[in-house]
Image (cartoon, rainbow over all chains, first blue to last red; front, side):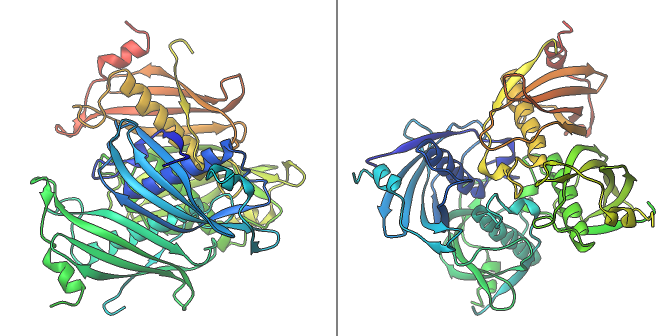
Length: 131
Length: 131
Length: 131
Length: 131
């Protein structure tokens, strides 16, 4: 990944399911935590901004189970920019080369007042290294 | 879908996020609820059986937001059977033709005692209509 | 309980924790599900109404662990009405006399536009059997 | 509080509900996160130890709503020690004197092999400052 943004995840006891591993759905939760916190850090306002970024598609490949004692880090990049949509690529890992999962979400930029899709804000081009 | 299995989902207030819709991650939770309850109904024992079905890949395409008042139904089918893995295809809908999402999970059959993958149990072939 | 309102809960695989029981926090989730669905049924509008009911205090006594295969029912009553607050009493049980937990929440009536507490709406007096 | 143990909580987007605040149930989740991580830090083994600590009662008084941008810290103390049970007292705050909630859980020490309650382990007396 070229322009990669990283967030450490604090796993919760409730992420562990009856099989004793982090539940597969929790990994999508980790993507959301990383996405929200990284984009906030880069200046995006989720609650009061004029643009919402909605998930149009999400996918995850699970490589290795995560245990409660494991360190969990999400690395994220803006991997494609279209007119009103963009892709985020993710690697969930232990910070030392051990990979738990790879994932991707397709995001659509939406204006809730106009009730319509809108152009991808400039900040995502900057994050993608296109300017 | 040929041999389709269906489960109604009871949405929870906590499935709604700050945008007022069912959160995108909750749809993966709905897939899990449907998968567990339908497979239990068909005779699979999640907690005491000799085989575990682990999610190796999950993907979801979001077509339409779900509101708290919407009825939510998951229809599921066994869409592929391999040696030690199989696919489940899902449609999340309102029971009257309105589609919220389509999804797929790739499942791997795992024996926690042998610590290895094992052949797909016969019941999944039956569910796929292959016998 | 005199005027008791009842809701069946659909437990989820994710309610089970690493100890193989329904996690203790999920029981507060069950109270919320029952409260929201029963009050909606009685005419309360959570998202567009002028009054919000906020939880000022919550307490739960755990009597018996809940397993994934257990039937779960919440019975609820309005057990006290004050000026701008009221109490809800709950019994979480199996529908056949087996008790899992008793609980109580103190609710405060709040107007988000006035940004102040307001009088308890008449519907709660009706639910308490006071009219 | 005399012997107080502290943990910072990483709030998640999914802790926010449709009212735009951290949901009241999430605060019980925060208590669990603090309890598990602090006790692990002090040497308690949740998954492979011979003693389980089960929640027999939980209560929380909500003082002030928590927003997504708020810092959240849990301070915890062992506030009572009995034969086979003990109490944990909690303060949820912003690290700078702002209080969000006070809470208490009554914990019972249980041996899953004996299927019976057992004496409170010595480490909790040490945490309470009784030795």
